[in-house]
Length: 217
Ligand SMILES: *Cc1c(COP(=O)(O)O)cnc(C)c1O
Figure (cartoon, rainbow, N blue to C red):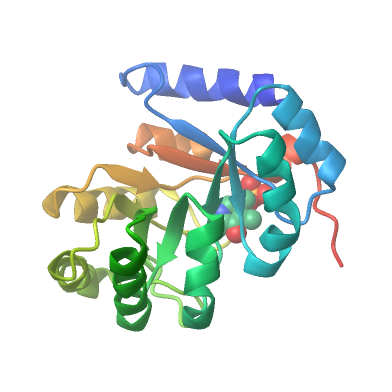
C-alpha cells in the first residue's frame, strides 16, 4: 500500500473517532528495509521513521539525516543500557523505556548533554513473559519514579500479544495513560492501526503495510 493510502486511512479513522485532523502521527517503520524504499518515502516528503536496532540505525540514518536534517527517527525496539548514549545521539524519540536501570542511565545522559528525546514507557499489557515492558500494575510507580528523576515522559507504548484482539490492550493502555496524566499513546501497527486510533493512539507504527515485506537476514 502506498504512503498516501495509509495516510488516507489514518485520516478517515481519526475523523470517525471524532478526533481532530492531524492528531495522529504516522511513524514509518523502516527496520530491515532496503535504503531505496526509505529514500522513496523521503522523496515523497515523509519525515518520521521508526527503527528497532541501534546498530542498523547507526549505519543508515547519519547519512540520510545529512540530506534531510528535519527527519525524526524513533527507536521502537528494545534498548540495551550500554547503547543508551548512542541512542540519544541517533534518535529523536525512544518508545521502549521499560526498566529502572535504563531510566537512570537516560536521566544521567539527559542531564549531562542537555538534550531530551521524547520518551514513551513501554507497558507489557499482555503480561507476556518473553516481552519487554513494565507490567500494568507497576506502570504508575515506574512513571512516578521517572518523573522524580526529571525524566519527562511523553506517553505510553504497547505491543499487544500476537493473534489476540488488540482492542482491550489499547483500551487498557489508554486508561493507564489517563490516570497518569499522559497524552501520548504509541500503539497500532500495520494490522490494527485503525483500531488503535479509535482508542486514542497519537502515534501509530506502520511498517510492512507501507514498505512491503522486510528483508530478512
Ligand atoms: C516492526 C515493528 C512495527 C511495525 O510492524 P508492521 O507489522 O510491519 O507494521 C511496529 N512496532 C514495533 C515495536 C515493531 O517492532
